[in-house]
Amino acid sequence: MRTRKILFLFLFVCLLSTELFSQTVYITKTGAKYHSSGCQYLRRSSIPIELKDALDRGYSACSRCNPPTQVNKKEKATINTQSQIKEKVKSSSEVTSSQCQAITKKGTQCKRKAEPGSKYCWQHSR
Image (cartoon, rainbow, N blue to C red; front, side, top):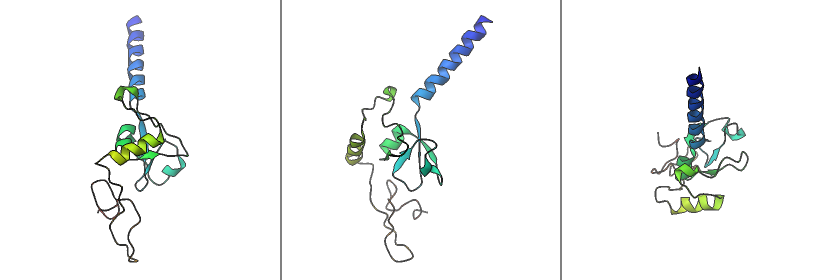
């Protein structure tokens, strides 16, 4: 009986530690922000992503739901504020925040942000 309690406690601690070290946030198809679960801006699309990946891709935190802005200490990130996130995005050579180069049916240039590594947004890259 005692070994069962110890095993249960061990499993509980393992599950708790994995939850603490993996920080899942959510992005949308067209937005440039990342969100916490339950944010009102996630009604139409909600794509789960790790916080570290969202920051690496150049997403910034939503001002409504205030998701975490700092990666867990285990991942050894030094991002603390929104200004530091923006500086990291500007210095990253992988992230290009250019406008989509597609022309719409009306004859105007698309106003969406191009996907990383592409000249086109999610809709026009198909």
